[in-house]
Length: 74
Image (tube, rainbow, N blue to C red; front, side, top):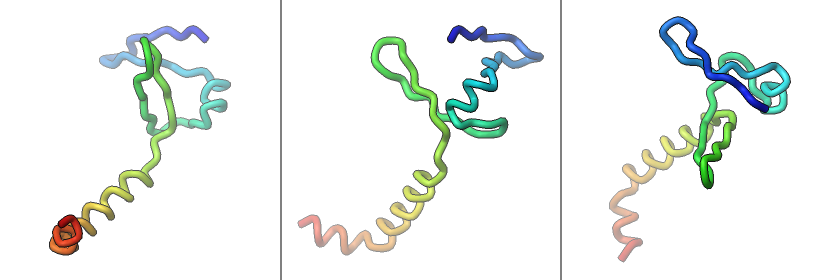
């Protein structure tokens, strides 16, 4: 599928057709992650907030139990 990057107001946008949005399971307002692949390829996927929440919890546990982790690391 070939898409064109367009200037809209002060922004530069890439408009995705409805059928592509449906295939990607995306809708207006969703956040996406763009990952660089081999060569000049990219992957577009829906942003998952669960990963950020998991990292927040992990950091809190690491901070709370820092002394225990230091002992276990020896």
